Length: 324
Image (tube, rainbow, N blue to C red):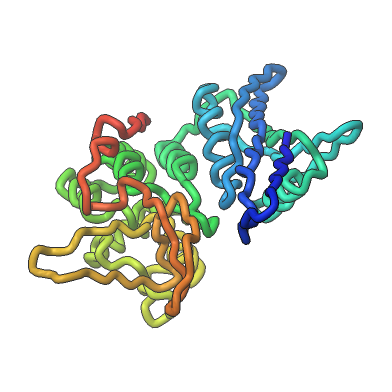
């Protein structure tokens, strides 16, 4: 509940020009996850103190954490809604994206309701995906997070872990069996080192069949260093159809979130410039002021996307294992 503060000043007292502000009341949101499998149903709960900015990504992170704790990763999200409750009143708002979520949260913040639940309903198939390709694609989709601008990206250390040399080997064994071709170990080693972002992009674009397309890229010595691709048709390789190339150019940004490096000892200072398409993987962003040249923000960068400081928390021991 909110409070009331009364300030009494005696004769001759100096009344401050600014009245002290009461601390902001925290607004909490219940997180409810329902996983349905046939006649069975699993339910998990959590609670989130809503941040002032980007509440939807934070709510989704909490929801995804509950899904993992239920052991239901890979389940299909069927619907999500925010249930708003007040005295003698209850409404349900369907949530399609961050905008509709923010609108529901605004109703809660405005005091129209006193309680809210973010409810997500999933369907779980009885059988896991059969192909290595589908399991890798599901792992990539599940690993996506959003920046404060609601753009999806896959953290660098998770991407490298999903597309490990072992998992790429399993993938190409499957491709070779389906397409009656062969891929040598030396080529797979190079892909896991120099081509895993391009491989992830083609997987996310869900291009079928994709084995021959991948080989064309690598036979023409096109690896991660060639990214990002220019959307111009003049830059489209002859072995890509216009639709395939359009999908690749769209999804490439999700696998290429910027990794910041420190200044070299010979540099007095370092300036990095990126156009609007690049995703700078900020996980938090707060405006702290304005100046003659623009606004100033305090940001928090995804730990695995900076090479300026060595952080123990993003070492190999903290990376989840992806088993196929």
